[in-house]
Amino acid sequence: MNSPSEARQTGKAFAILLLAFLSVTVKAQQPTYAPPPASAATVAGVRFESAAPIDESYRAEFDRCDRENIFREEEMPGFRKWTDDPNKVKVLLRFPNGTIFFQAKLALDIDGSQKACNNPGSADQCGTWFKWKDQSGKAANVDSDQYPFVVIPVAGLRGRDDREFRDKTGIAKGDLGVVIYKDKIVPVFVADGGPHNKLGEGSAALLKALGEDRCREWQHGHCARYRDFSVPGNVLFILFPNSGIADLTPAKALEKIRVEALKRFAQLKQTVPPEP
Image (cartoon, rainbow, N blue to C red; front, top):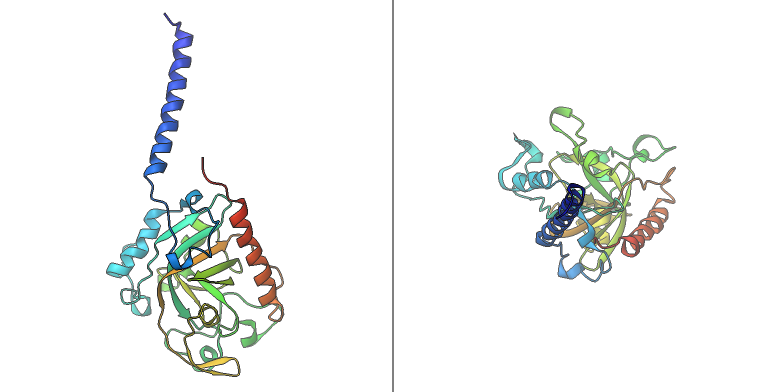
């Protein structure tokens, strides 16, 4: 007959084995993300099975906004209405090394462009969240026509600063990333902030680089007329927290962002191990 001490040790060992079994069982039941077939070769080597949902209830808010135009129990007014142009946020994941991934649509953001600064529409503005240092006036803003960039949710209702996306992901202004659509991959940085209920927006230069040009008429590197409609889904966003490059200048930004973002993407393929 076992002593009380031996019985306790046996009980602990059994509990550890049971917890390990339950952990493996739960993981086995979780569906593994699979990228769209058209992008599978481009992201080959990225171990999506090692990434975990950041906050499924938060991601589901974008789904609800797509269906009902309600986000965090508030009805979205005006240009925030999203039911005719859904977010389609399929997943919102974090890799073990902190890299953020989501799949969504890609809407057009022309903030910072020549048109937005001189002849804006109802939802356009000259200013961008990121500003070039040592520049002034309109030149300090990031030109949507010239620089591939993405937009993250920052603006709540009634002028509130909404930090939910930033706090949950660690992504901040100026951070780098890559955007993938079909077989194309474009290095980007976070240069603008948008409504808190919208996820999946990027500059005119980004859509053009992805083969989805939305400009009807280019004039000397600037767009005079846009076709404002989204890539409706299957766009992959990979963003790297704490990756911003200090002292970016307009002249050197494209090359610096390209080199560093692609390096981090290559590292993601090589260094993210599968979960046990």
